[in-house]
Image 1: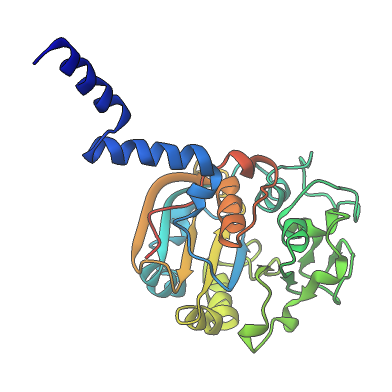
Image 2: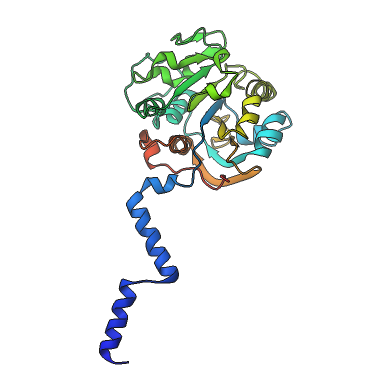
Length: 296
């Protein structure tokens, strides 16, 4: 081979990579162009996502427990179990704000928050700005939009949407307003049981039965109607490194799957945003990761 031929061959190798090299170059180029869109490309686009937040139990207190037959034998067995899911702090309230807005918003205790005192972006405001629907369903809330700090087993500390001026209080509904026709559910909604049924004041068995009775029909429906149920916890019992149960269940979730990757509330928020097709990400969700490896 002459020197000129060798030079031309070298230039062709640099200009026109082939085979695996070409595929790698193309993949890198796609990533550089699309950025976070590429991370969300593997996620499904569910019509409805319902997120339920339970309270103050470590992973091993629920997953594998005979006191939680519905969670284990139906949701975990038929859905995806995140084996290394973590709360971010203690006590409860900051975790709710982190899950909803990607930040604790300066909350360090469980005190009642001034209604509309915050203006930071959050999941609800992002959905509303994008023309998508949002609601929360709050058990034992005295009435739709009520801003009371507490009432019986209801506690505002578990309902971060009241803290944000960019979330209409009218989107905070009672649990009795959870629609019987699930097609009427918003794009994304949060369900917050009261202090007994979320396992805070009552047993794991009580919370498990509540999930089955109140949301079992929706979970079964979601399996065949392009929808999703997410069950997670705010924090652990303060004895287990803040490792908490988190389960995804629905039509596009691989039944019986699990992920051993490490995730926290910011990753769950990021995933909820991307499942909804949002292009904005609140707080630390902007640098979080989508939950992967569980989708069919």
